[in-house]
Image 1 (cartoon, rainbow, N blue to C red):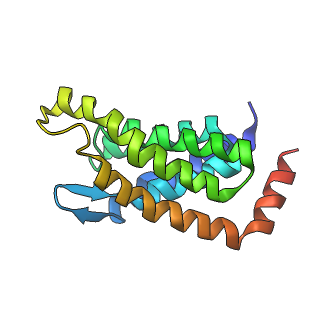
Image 2 (cartoon, rainbow, N blue to C red):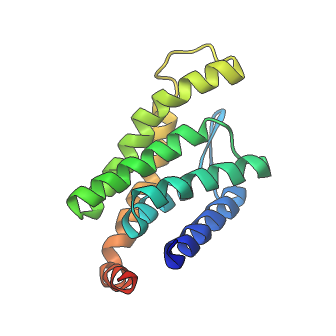
Length: 164
């Protein structure tokens, strides 16, 4: 197993879990965690889809263990990270990674979270209930990640070159 991606994923997971303790935006009964989506895009671009999904899983797990997350964070974050990684892998464009994260979490992940919320929390709402809050949360983190990736483009290239 390669060491650099493992260490990078672990650092991303630790940063995401720690940030979840202090950086969130209350939105009615929800809390938006833009750092999760920021890290999903960065890990998708720098590490690839598999590592991005593992990082998203680790952040969701740690946030749940710390009491700052909920079980609906798993499908949303992991689907968004996967789609971000796949789109970046296919296009090599950071913008598509951000779009993949936003659509993967905001729409597909929100729809996938509904059965979890219905089964575990007894949610009695429409299947589209999570789309707005998930989309608002992922949009802010995805835009921030895209901005950072564009600003540090040479660093990203050098990071990728170190992998070889």
